Image 1 (cartoon, rainbow, N blue to C red):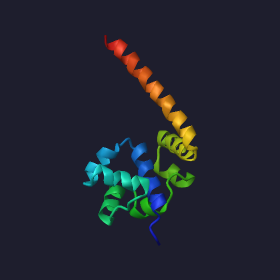
Image 2: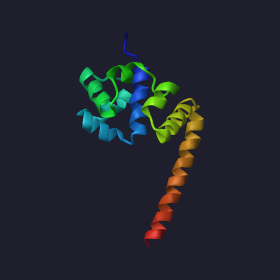
Image 3: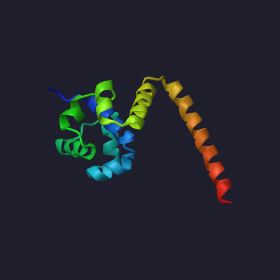
Image 4: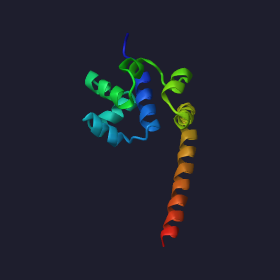
Length: 126
């Protein structure tokens, strides 16, 4: 079977986000540069076998599942993810299908919410 970089990149991004890792944390755990890890998620570079094996071990899944099964699809998503992770998985799948302009609107809204949260917490501290 041939390596499907699209599926692999979606899986490693989904697993990273649902498990709460940053790209920096994973790059350190995998002993690769952050840029290399970002390239894995962007589907512009394939991880070597040692890195794939390390990723599978981090997430406690088989190498076959990591590489060849789209984890965002329903049955596997239910097996490997808890309820909160499943909801996030669904949201991420829906987000990935949006237009660039729609994604921009969402990011602007998130930035606004984060700014408000920062102002709120700064007032509480004083």
